[in-house]
Length: 288
Image (cartoon, rainbow, N blue to C red; front, side, top):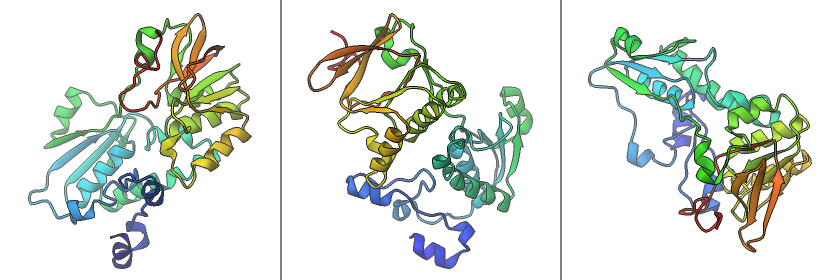
C-alpha cells in the first residue's frame, strides 16, 4: 500500500494516490491517471526485475508513454522514448495555460524525474515511421501516440458540417482568440478546461450534458466547485440537454426529460459527447 511504500522509499519515488474518495463515494472502482496500479496492488503485485532485459522503444511522450517507459525502465529494460513535438506531456500541456489545471503537471513532472533516475533516453522532435523503427533495432515497440479525433463521428449523418466540430486541444488553441459563441459538451477535465479557456478569452460558452449532472466523472469532492468556476467565468451550464443535430449553422438541442427542442447558433462545437450507456445521438435522444 502507499503508506508502506512511502515509509520505505524517498518522497520522490512514492506517488500519491488520488481520486479514491471521489470514486468511493460514487461506488465506482478506484482508478488514478497518475498511478494506474492504485487499488490493484494485490492483483499486480510488486514489480520484479525482468528475467531478460530488452531494448524497448516507446513512441509517444504523453502520460501513457511516459508511464510505460517508467515501468519498463524500473524492471531493468533499456528504454528510449520518442516524442514528435518539442516537449513531453502531450495533451496535458494544452491545459497548463489555466492556473486551476497547472497542478496536473506535477504528476507528469514526477514521472519525468523517474525517467531520468532510471536512465531512460528521451528524443524530442522525432517523427517515427517504419524505417526509423527498423533502424532503432528494438526488441519491443510500445505505441502510445493517443487517439485521433474524428469530428464526423460526433453526430454522424445528423450533421451537415455547417458548424465546426473540434477537439479539446483545438478548443484550447482556439481560446487564444474570441469566438462569438461556442458549445462544449460534458466530458471529464478536458472539456471543463476548454470551456474555461474559451470563456477567459471573452467567448460566450454553453456547457451542456444529456446527463442529470454536468461532468459526472469530475468527482464528488470537487465537481461542484468546478461548476462554480464555470459559472463565475460566465458559462451557461445545462444538464439534461443533448445535441441531436447540426444544420444550417445551428445546433439543435433537446431536453432529455421534456423532449423540448431548441436551436442555437454557435461558432463552434467541441465534440466527444458524454452519453448514458447504450444511448447514441440517433437513439432515444436523436432526431426523429
